[in-house]
Image 1: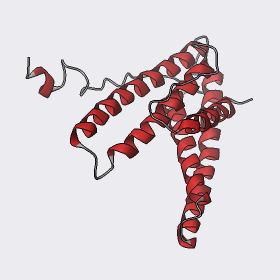
Image 2: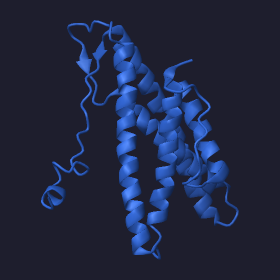
Image 3: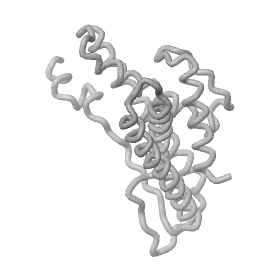
Length: 201
């Protein structure tokens, strides 16, 4: 099994499981061994699924401003959790390939494996929700056709991204590529770096 196949299976399982309740406050019942890569992949998609629906909620034009602020804070926290988890997954790859000696002509990729996997997780959610639109009975034929066309593109994107992830991992394992991970260093969450926050001290 390729790594992208593992990711896609877990992301699809998490997405379906989330939508059993379709509730941003539902508890996650992660079926994988704690701290395993499978556990982290499932957790990654669960965070993405919750945030997807938080983003839906905050766009309600009738939302109470106090509730909107609380949601914004929650989305900020979710973004930080997502970033931390991506960096943790990259740590797994750094450890996995730590004995590989890159070739002299080895090159670096534009993004790390985990950030590509992050996009694959989001893609699983896009596909799930676009499939829902395709299956709706209360829409026009035009809406159905547009959504089916979009779904076809998303499925092609999934195939291409999965292949690219597997190729990247093969290249790293063979020494043709090497990993170099930069921490995101988000400034807006840091009281020492956000001028709005440190100005209030």
